[in-house]
Amino acid sequence: MTVTDSRTLADRIEDLLPQTQCTKCGYAACRPYAEAVAVGTANYNQCPPGGAEGVARLAALLGKPVIALNPDNGVERPRPLAVIDENLCIGCTLCMQACPVDAILGGPKQMHTVIAALCTGCDLCVAPCPVDCIAMLPVTGAATGWDAWTLDQAQAARERHDLREARLARERDAAEARAAARRTAAHVTADAPAAAPTAAPDGAAAAATPADDAEAKKRAIIQAALERARKKKEELAAKGAGPQNTERVSAEVQAQIDAAEARRRRLGIEGGDEEV
Image (tube, rainbow, N blue to C red; front, side, top):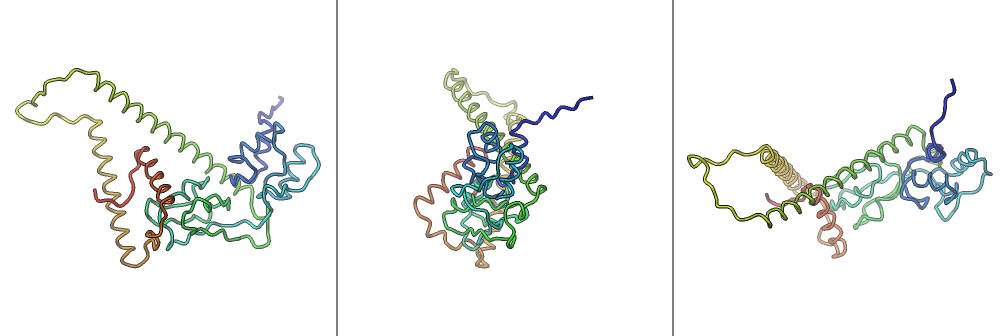
């Protein structure tokens, strides 16, 4: 029986990439770069995390000569780890939104931290940070490229990236569905004739629908979470461990934070430390 390998050339190229999802190749992630190399619109020497060994692996697959890493895309280096100065973090969540593999934990206006075992060293969290509290520290000694990274780590990073992309797509779809439902409800309400109010039997309140119960439960959960966050922030502030520089946030940075919070509200995710 003949076994046919159904993988495309792009699949094989992607398998040879380190999956740091760093965008240094000029593409949004490793997969788009693999597809571009497969069709010849990108060269096979544009992946700094893969380094010289990565170029050699791709050259062997493509049947092409080994060439130098393109310096325009960066340099081969020891793998770094993102480290957040938690005393400076203002909890804007911009680094969380930038991380392609969900390696950062935190909440709105709460300190953030990096899960070291999940960080790919992509650097993408550094630029969005409005208070410059993220440092990239080398953690592999003199080892660079594939000597500082393993196939197992690459596969795990790819899985986390794919799961994150799927989650974001679901959240976008859900937000669009909610917005469409609101528009439909508003349209129906505007077109419907006014109805006379009716009293519930014996003056009792009308029975709540399952949707009402679910909404009430959701509000209760959110309120409880906000209360826990408020108490935690008060405890940290009492210990002098809370954010130290929230008074020095510029108007431009505050606009970024407000935009991030607005996106969370559109997705039905409440945040902050307001009284509820």
